[in-house]
Image (cartoon, rainbow, N blue to C red; front, side, top):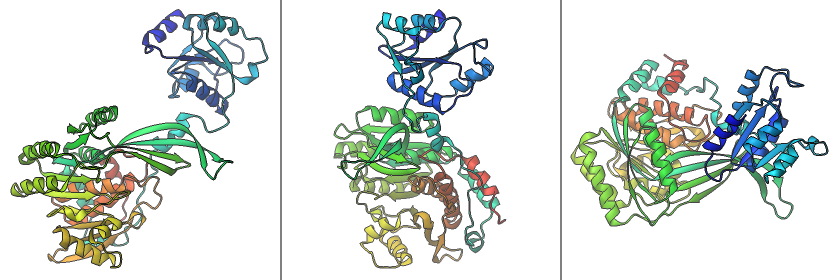
Length: 493
């Protein structure tokens, strides 16, 4: 046992607290999960000791029991106890030894050992709530049940779209060189156990259980582009903080090239979503929305202009948090036009003001209906009229107005060269999290257009990408093989 204790202590960071739980663990049941969660919450490292096969009450071989305990992410170390539990504790010297409430009135051989070095012996069965982090995490990790797609209501037939064309398009998108410029966001999804309503005031009370962190904003757009086969470079503005370090490391792990400048007057934008029962209850934004200064804007411009001769596509991913002041947009767009680099733009206004029409001469803009109407200051016209007027105001080649659960309205040229408007319904009728739908549509459709597709084929691919994206919680990069699988499930030719 001494070797286990020495190895655990040697690997523990300075000052880390250790909790220890022992038992048979024939089958890990909810009672075990509550006890282990409580132990994990009391310390930084949870260590579990399993009794050997010869111990009373053991019915499952040790290899299977170890696999079951080690599969729990809250357990850092698990091993077989060879000898007395008190001896293990004496060697490990955990800060906390946790046992079930049923042992509180009984004789506990560990008590004297724990007391001898100043540790604490805790008796509790944990809270009666959905306490297992691993069970909570199923919302993030559970794969969507295929096939996801529902019928496109004749859209493919009207435009002569086929499964073969979609597959060929994905092939053409691979190898594109894409630059994305815009606001970086880090998203925290805080999974909560709903406790009820406060008795003091009408407030919903929840208990945080688990947090998952994702890259958002222009970061996820560049990550989508990379996972769809492009060489992707992100140009953005970070704060001087740990959130920036996290974002850089995460993007590098996704093989996205990051060219970021630091603005010490702002934090790196971070959004926290509190969720319970598969629904978002509250979002808290940590950000500054002032425009970056001229010196920083000039540096960002120079960095982007330097790569224009080497890229196939430039994407503006604007969340209106100050990364893209108008003078910077105009200057970069002018240089891109001179070099013949196609440009696409998305400017989001979920909780702030935006004007997508400020991005001129784009091959594609992808506003929501609200964003399109904000740009035109038009709340009365029909949606088809709004799309036409927005295309003219922005001098855009194509407009896709995303409509949430109603899909999207596409305004672009037909085969005769004349403009027309058509609607593609949402292809996933049971979304889990719609937060990243727009980014997936924007990325996949932009790359499709750059690869030579018309707006109808590109939009169809974008609809499929969005259906996949909203089938899971949190922003994770789209995978080409997942898209191909769904394409193969489509009923039309």
